Image (cartoon, rainbow, N blue to C red; front, side):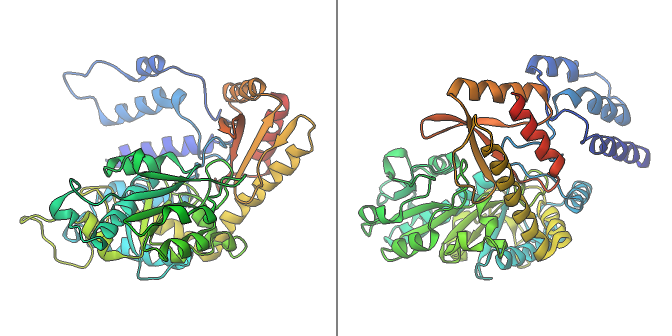
Length: 447
């Protein structure tokens, strides 16, 4: 075992040390990767050391370097050293935080992280927390708690009677919501006909003044957004909460990356009102820079949160004060909070703020540099870490992105913004430095 772990650590170190020189991505087909990695299932087992060495060698052409500071295509955080090391320990310890009896240590770390996250994001310390695979399931969980609460307020026992015959639930969403909201609602039995779509401003922020016609007093959930996936813009959360709560509606905030602005004294004003929401989804594997996978749902109404998620069976031991399965859709799962703990403790309050502020400053630097070029149009107000640009027409913009992806020096992708093709630049890796930005700008100018 020592030889195997030492060899694996050496392979990992070799990969990390090559981050400055290796391509971010290489063009390769699925068939090529399957041919390189796959073999017939052996009748007899293969030596573990050889298995790991072969995997590291054969998978290499298909690895995308999202942790080296030069990946700008999606909101992909890097991995902080302490978080990576803690994640290795989590794999070694193999703890299941579903029930306290399975890991008192994992339960304690989840509780500590819950308190730290509430403190960092400026929400009351009484909020509950569940640690999920990402914002998709964090959104699902927050919306499940919302569904339970608004139906209970309408006199409907969802857990006993189910959805058939229940009062209709209206879900108010912004026109530029993230796709995970619709998917989470679909999982919850809420279809597109039950959505009330609200117009947005020129940066994709929900217009709070347009909520009134949809707040009728029936069971209603309002889905706000902290961090538009294209522009980074944050909805007017305070005004949305005030208007929604005046009519008894639940406010859920999809804050996958943008809610982290609340941890920065410089940017906190963008999320004013977040503390008045009823539930919040965030990603750890984005701006907190912990390994995949990690999302967190925070909820101002722990009773609704727990009732919507709780798992109970006669054989399950429920001693102790925290069972992870009370707060997420999963029962058995990875103890992902160990990496969150390591990231938060290694950074401290100031470090988290500086990480967020540095990414935003780098996004502004990129926008200002590119805006000086005659053939580059910056399309958005750069308030957080997102920069939208366009190079001439749709076709040229697509060609430029495709050429950059093939070259491999950096990586970015396209999106559709207000009916036009654009290149989206996302800055969220702690490892992004001046050299990475220079590489990005040079690649765009040469494309």
